[in-house]
Image (tube, rainbow, N blue to C red):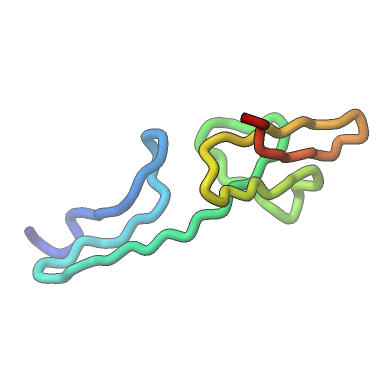
Length: 85
């Protein structure tokens, strides 16, 4: 494979998340440590968000759980919690 002709990476929901230039004979290792956040607004699919402009976000902590609930209150703040089993 010639240099500068391919990239490798990790995708989520059909979109690239982490990517690097493929180099022959090189082993690439990805160690993602994702953080998940929620916000509300009018955004386009694939749009890069300016986090400095977002004022109503909340981190979604995933600690060995597969489901979380998020409620946007009337004061435009998020309440994030794991559902009761």
